[in-house]
Length: 408
Picture 1 (tube, rainbow, N blue to C red):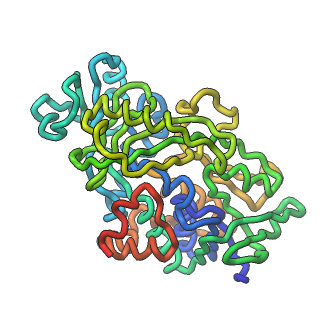
Picture 2 (picture 1 turned 60 degrees about the vertical axis):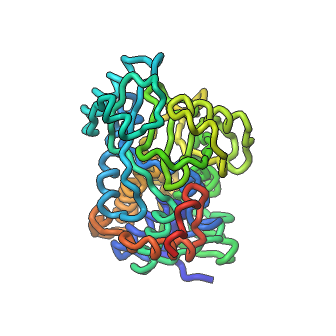
């Protein structure tokens, strides 16, 4: 058994670990539980892009602005969790030139730096880029290693007094008189706890956690495939400058390149098809930008489920759903000590955690400021130490399995 915490955080991805860290740094007694290893949900199964916000600038300026703000912060505090590659948006022959112009203008309006490249600059940066590029612009994208990021947040939370419990699934919630009065935990905990407040940071599974409290949180999860290929000759992130579609992004690692992705609605984030056509289409479409990736070995594939929130249950492939985030205070729905943090991006996890922690502290009467925008993560300058944190919390995900552990 464990002691009853002031706050129970359900979900050990980037956002949940970020909430636990932020609460602990504000001297709040917090316990974090995750049904698997840390980051085993969406965080550790992403494509690993630290967004500049350019991808969403014209369609979702609020989400784009959140991304560029957090992009800058994470570069300062996350160290070896980040690889600063830069990114390109490339317009190929046949792509709509107006879309390129609108995106660049939207980036400038939001505050995302761009730079048009001439042919010589472009070829020096990516020699293998297809010859039919019409235009390309640089943006401040980067690569993020989520296993390290999540584990470092958990380690800092623990050092500040938080209890971190991977492999401790939430099994039930007990609600009485408009409050959660108990949480049944399995696995490594195996017992009931009685928290004063519960934060639902379960990502794509947030609807299931909320339902245990009799609440309706309408998630709209969508799966996407990532295909890592044996190709290490690209340095910047490559984005196809067109309406978001399958196979329009290439993420560079050291010896591999991650190609993605698709977007297919799924009714259950635990039970979905993993279709060969998604792999084939992603490779084919990415090869339209970078032809050599069509002819190299596929090293590994994995699927992730986007934790999209849409109370109107979005139609189609759900690409149009906002990547902004929402903190849902369930007091107005009859459960006064329960909140859900939904939507968002891996890039914006810290901001999501800050907003959630602000709400919890307000409800608990805690007067303390957020420190996470300026506090450097532990091990940020030491890849080996970060990788030790990953091992400690069973936090290795497929996104960065080719990177994490090399320093040990």
